[in-house]
Length: 341
Image (cartoon, rainbow, N blue to C red; front, top):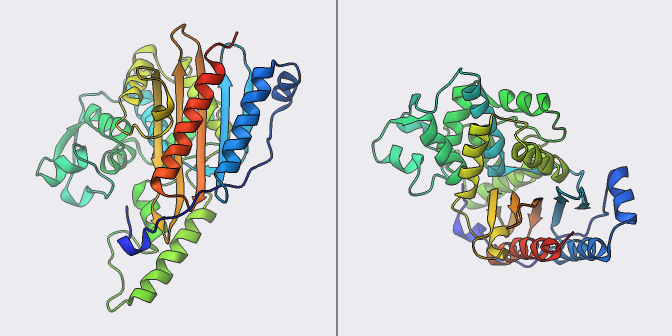
C-alpha cells in the first residue's frame, strides 16, 4: 500500500529513547550478568536514541543462558506483515490436526488481489490470470514473499483473524493479537471502506486531510499489535516446537529463512548466518512511516539460539536510514553474543 509520491517524503532519523522495562527475573539476571550484558543493553539504548524522534521497541533473549535485554519491551507496536508468521502458525496447526492439507487448493478471484503483492508472488500470478493456489503456495507467498493477497486468502480459509489470536492465547502468548487482515489495515490508512474509491471531486487538500486522519488512526488503533516481549515469546515457542509438530515447525522456519527482504536485521549479520525472520512495513505519509519491523531467530554455528524483535513506530527517517538502523541492531546483537558463554 502506498500513497502519492509527493506524500512519501524523505526525512530524518527517528526515535525517542524508552525506559528499559524488564520482568523481575530479567532484572535479577542483569544485576548478576557479565560486562558483555551491560554493554549490549547500553548499545540497544543507544540505538533507540539514534532512532529519535520515532519510537522503537527491542527485545533480545539468549535462549541458552536465559539472559534478556529490552527497550520498551512491554509496549504494543503494530505488526504489519510480521503478523504473517502467526497466521502461518494458525494455518499449519490445522494441518497438524488433519483439518487441512498443504496441497488443498484455494480458488481466488481478481477481486481478491491486494496491493502489496510483489513479483513473483500469489498476487502477481492472480493478476496474470491464475486462479487456483495450494495452501503451500499461499504460505510461501505470505511468509517468504510477504504477499498481501496470499495472507488474506489464508485468513479467510481458516475462518478469520480470531482463529490466529485464539491459537496464540492457547499457547500462552500474551501481548500479541491479530484482529484484522490486510483489507482492514488498508481501510484504516485510506479512511475508506474496502472496495470504494475516494469521493468524486475530492481535492488534493481534502485527500491530504483524509490520509492524515488515516495515519493518525493507524497509530492509535490497538489491533494487530504485539509487544517485543510477546514477539520473542512467539519465536521461542516456535523454535522449541511448542506451537506446531516438528514437521510443521521445520516448514515454517524454512519459509522464514527464505523470506526475500534482506535489508533489515539480516543485512547486519555475517553472510551465511542462519536467520529465520519475518519483517513488516507500513505506508509512509508526509515523510513519516507508521511502522517498520523485524523479528527473528539467530542460530549461531555452535547451535546457540538468540531471539530478537525490533519494532519501529512513527519514524521520519528515510527508507535507507531505517534499514541501516535495523542492520545495526542485527550487527550489534550478533557481535555482542557470538562469543557469549
